Image (cartoon, rainbow, N blue to C red; front, side, top):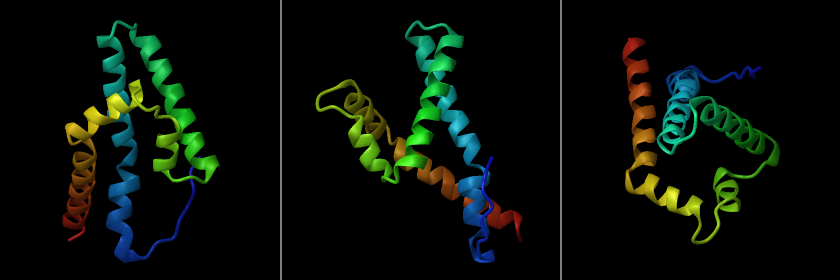
Length: 115
């Protein structure tokens, strides 16, 4: 299912914040996307199925392509299209900054718990 990685002790808190807590971040995003689908009129089961398949496809592309996530995002973002409109809203609402801040908070909490 996953991989085992050896990392120095000094990086354990960062690994915990990024990978140990990481599944919850994805679940949170998936939950929000399902809720958006419901808001737009889709049945919950259809919205959930669509998002799970989208997540699997995106993860497979990340794993198999060897490309940077920016390149993959740009490849699926048409000028003036729906995706760039959504990305603009995510950036306007500070989603990237909030995610980075959340991971920093998890790191800080891991350090605190390790004392």
